[in-house]
Length: 409
Ligand SMILES: C[S@@+](CC[C@H](N)C(=O)[O-])C[C@H]1O[C@@H](n2cnc3c(N)ncnc32)[C@H](O)[C@@H]1O
Image (tube, rainbow, N blue to C red; front, side):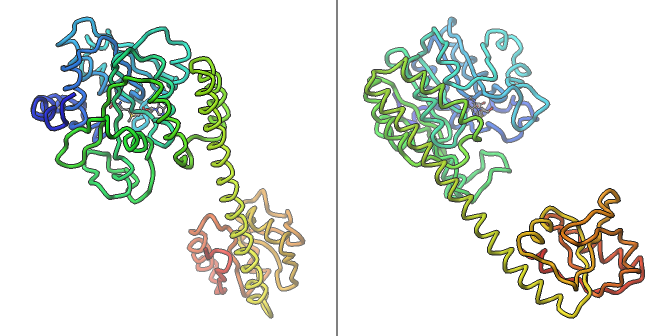
């Protein structure tokens, strides 16, 4: 393999030209041309016969990979898979839309499979690949799980390329985000999956060259058992929260169990499965602790608010405004049963006449009859309610104090 700079010198000019043909609607998505320089250089050098891409989106990389490959090997085939059916940043467009638009002829030669994860594809795949581009979910451990899934499909000395190996540092704001969409959540520690892989395989990987922030790395897979040992290490690096929602986890973990048992030696399979089980369990535990802590903080906060409220309404005639679920819980849990509170105001006619605790729900027009001298807004998820109440008071020519205890954070 050459160095990143050598591939850069060979291919950056023509890659810049090629990138000018991208459809405008792709905006800045998948616009990382220095990564494409490395990929095109590798394809020129190794002339792969069978390419696999995990994570397709608009099909832009699939297009430039096939376009390059056919120059050097007229028999090259490419298969791309994607978990989705539509583009995540342009839901009205199908996966592969850019490929179809830019080159309808090449598009006919492309094998695109949507609605699949790497493990679904690998479990039923009879083919072997000599070039794989992994660019799907960047939340750790996905790049590692994708690598595990495609390992049995690799020919000897296959090239594996990972995109976004520094995305975590770009997200953290440590490296410039110029080649990424404007909506990247800068300032958050996330998307470290490809970086975990890069850190572990650094010595045997070639990093792309880029004058801004290199972000793509490639390696030759020689000894699958050695790779598996290192992947086990990657799998044990702490998993990122929200790596999948809980239904997806329930669905995907048994698939990995089945796949690993069928495709790897018993001892290795056992270690991988233990690692998946333990790390998933740790993450669930951490999430449970986070939820419990959140509930505890909420409980503490509500308790303080209920005490403050009881103090504020002393010697007043008060109404709540907003028959919210939150108010129901607050009244019940903190036993807010004060004679100073004479009812609840709510604009929703269907609620009027009902009760929360012993407080009846009235329409705003009843303010004139009830004559409260304190209003306590209780629609905590609708901060605009304060403005609404103020306008209603002006409309009714009333002057009543508003207590914002429940609305405060
Ligand atoms: C960064 S985009 C791929 C860009 C494409 N490789 C290119 O350079 O033109 C990532 C894609 O991976 C897909 N994806 C996310 N998680 C996946 C998973 N677990 N398996 C397969 N595809 C996934 C998303 O739907 C998204 O379209």
